Image (cartoon, rainbow, N blue to C red; front, side, top):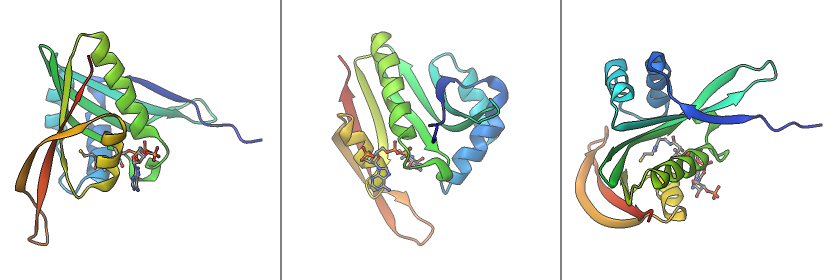
Length: 159
Ligand SMILES: CC(C)(COP(=O)(O)OP(=O)(O)OC[C@H]1O[C@@H](n2cnc3c(N)ncnc32)[C@H](O)[C@@H]1OP(=O)(O)O)[C@@H](O)C(=O)NCCC(=O)NCCS
């Protein structure tokens, strides 16, 4: 019999900056520092949610997280990352749906994000959640091979 692992979404704790560094560093080419994450998690305008998977022994291990900054009735995704070994299992979608529900409940009207137009999995996820492209910044991303990429600014109306 196959038992699906139990998943939980809850707050990132202040002591977890190193875990965020590790997951983010695996998921992105440009790592952020523990100091960056410590400051963001402590910031009262930032929502920091973790998705955790429970092992057979009951340990919950973070597999991904999302950070969002809210100001008045607008919010912006600062980053979302799922550990590469856990990608493609629906965890990114779960995190996005959860944060969108929380923002809606807190009265936020518009949620923005910026994404590399060449990041097909992320763009597809955002479109399927109702995000639309509202701006483009050509040549915004500089890749290690010298090429550049277009940043898409996307928005979803929550209410
Ligand atoms: C983008 C990211 C957060 C998505 O999380 P994930 O857990 O891998 O994605 P999910 O399994 O929840 O898939 C959600 C949707 O993303 C899209 N998607 C996921 N993997 C994909 C792939 N390899 N190719 C195309 N689309 C893909 C699909 O639309 C999928 O929905 P579907 O399964 O209903 O078709 C994750 O891949 C990641 O951390 N990537 C590296 C960091 C990054 O790019 N972050 C976003 C920067 S703005």
